[in-house]
Image (cartoon, rainbow, N blue to C red; front, top):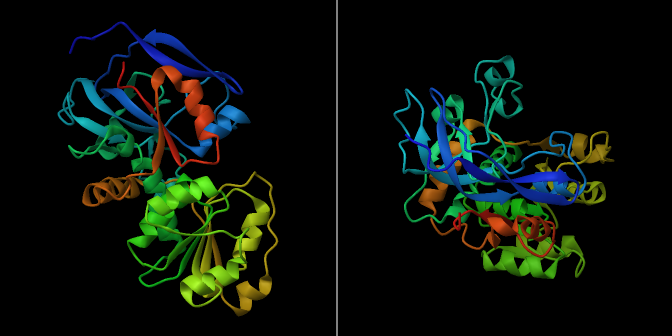
Length: 347
């Protein structure tokens, strides 16, 4: 298929705290590849961290963004699906499926993943591995900005699985940011006993708008709030969606006997946590972690979104046009909202 334009617009992180628009040649898909015309990109904590403080994997100059929805624009030789014109979401990476780590069932830690380049550009090449295992059609009525939530939702599903959330569990989500919100929404499909601990009043309003129960540990002791919500001052599953050592250490103390605490929010390399060995040994409290997703989580996330078409309405609290990308990064760094999405619909 012929190119529609010779150049495309790209948003590049040129230095810490500064993104700029530039142009680049429109890429041409090779054999087994497809070209995606990007419609929307969600900004995640990794993007904000790379923008504000730097990230070991994303050093400027670079193109950020990996929560992407768009329209297949062109395909290379040998590609029969998807076809041009189809709206899709695509995973930013896919595990190889063959290495020792993948065979152990922890493909999110695979060291041989296939990746997609940074998504903050008008056109994006999808490699064969991503097309085969990580590209899915979007339901016709799903808005582009909501569709970008497929990737963070997949991460949340992995976290819920790793934490072992089961029917009728008492679940405490610590931190009501976008990932905390998604963890709580997914947990709520398994149990109605879900509470989110959040101190920011504006963010709490968004969470309550999603139908979530919110408790404020700065207004009342968390144990008292949990007793009011669950009938006991503890939870079977404590999902820690805050990258703060002190908050994580405090949260571990609310895990019930035989329960688990999930470290979902990332801490800096080398950070150490103080834990109560009595709780681990005598009360059999487990501490687990989760990172990213597997291909099956992404597939399940897309299916879940289609089955629950309104469940994520309200998670996107800022939708910013591409020409104001710098403002989008500033919005995403603020603690008052949930998810910020950059739109390409004016392109």
